Structures are given as C-alpha cells and as structure tokens.
Image (cartoon, rainbow, N blue to C red; front, side, top):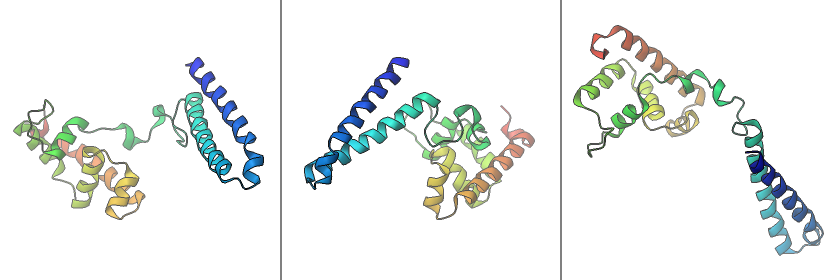
Length: 168
C-alpha cells in the first residue's frame, strides 16, 4: 500500500511539472498547449483524489468513514439480496430467487408502509439507489427521502417484532 501511495505521489510531481511547463505556451494563446494543460489539470485532480483516498482510508468528500456510517447505511432489516430479488421479481432459476413463502413474508413486512414509504424503501434497498438519486427520481427533497426510509424501517422493525408470520 505504501508503494502504491508513493507511486501516485511521484505521478503527481510529474503532472505538476508538466502543467507548469505548458504555462508559458498556454498564456501565449497556443490552443494545443491550452488543451493539453487542461487535460493534465484534470489528471492532477484525479490523482489528488486517489491520494486522499489512500491516505485517509475513505472516499474523498465523505465526512465519515465506513466505521461511522449513518444508521440508515448500517441497518439492514431484511437481507439486501432477498430485497433485490423481491423487487426484480426474477423467475430465472437464480439461487437468489425467492420461494413463495419468502415473497409472502416480505409482502407482510412491507404491507404496513404508505405508498411513498414503500416506494422509497424499495428504491433504496431493492434497487440500491442512493437517497439523493431517489429524491431526484421522485421529485422530492433528500431529507424527505431520509424521513420516508427512516419511518419505513421503524414500521418494518415493529412489524417483524410483533408478527408471528415473520418468524423464521
């Protein structure tokens, strides 16, 4: 890992040198030099992003690492693979296909949700969309999506705890 980071830092040095070497030509109005300098600038940005990821151990721009995810990112009330199979309603002999009993259990757990909560929950856990993508798809705010999914998870938790049908 250390060698990989060292290699990216050396690449960054080379890109910075190339970027500065093209400065005079680009400032003189040379179109080719300007285009090449822009391309090198984009490459520098990508290398910086990778270096930050390698140094911090988390995706650049994220405030929290994987060990400190928000509750909605940690808690999975249902097996994600089964939820995806439920949403896809696939019948193509895949090992993740659900039995009729499993389909009924998921239906039972989801029956307590409002239409919007169910839609948000299925998009998040069945289709693996991010909360911001769901907000964009449904034309609502991200905080609304967060609220709908949080309520859905609470309702499903209560349903799972209180329903004999969902045991086993």
